[in-house]
Image (cartoon, rainbow, N blue to C red; front, side):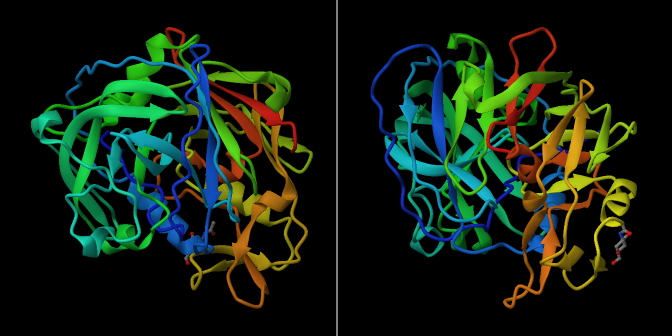
Length: 399
Ligand SMILES: *[C@@H]1O[C@H](CO)[C@@H](O)[C@H](O)[C@H]1NC(C)=O
């Protein structure tokens, strides 16, 4: 099956573009962490979220794999949060310029706004300055979306630093053209995909992800996403921070045959009522919502007064003051719970009368998507340190 591709989960979410500096030059251990920034000058509509997620997972996958060299060091970076939870942005130094990138576990390209773009397409963004001597001659990339948005360009091998950790010959996909929706989303200067390298779209020579390039130098070949609702979170690379979750981490084996962090739960719970139906899905930091099989969505909203499946708004909405049950995935027989308040994504009208649900249907997608609504309740460990990749979840301390 050729589903996947790289795509930006986010084009379009956010509003202002201040690049926070990557701070720490200190080098300590071979693990590092990065603070993400949560920005969002506006609430993106639920329908737009839905459109983007479908667009993201319906493009073809290229096939070759290529090895690139890298060397990692260690450090940490701190950034500042903004208001909404639609997306999480992390400062990444690309060829000496700090860009705000969306770290996306649902794609495998690192592509950025560059100085090759006309001003009409790049105004308001920080851009990567290309250097002809670093060009990977002949390599190109092109990503496109179901909603008509797209980006394309050429490719350079350059230094990429995340929280003080360096990949010295990272494939940086430098845009020469981006469509209007990317241009308008001035908080986002590009994307860093941390799914598996076989999904990378560079042709003819496929390229490796940043994590693949640095993982052998880390204490442990894993990274963890600690997305926090309404505040700064962190990506930890090379280590597990046990202070960030309660109880144990519960692991599932990952099926990466589609290049994604795909796994199967042993069930789910609505409130405290458990159901043994397994859910197959992907952990995707680049998707905002929690997309589940229709039967489960229907069962969940049967508990919500005033629920409507709205054609106008493109999904389930309910009165903003509705009482919502919690929703849990059951992993290794333990509940991993999304609190009620996360399940109210955003108002659909200025008067705050109706709100768009954080849970929506995955009908038409090849799998469920455990996006930000779920992930921001968890400490999520993406582990490539073993023969079979695995993913672990611990309930966040603050949820
Ligand atoms: C919601 O309504 C749409 C049509 O607007 C329909 O295609 C979809 O199946 C409905 N979803 C559920 C879960 O009933």
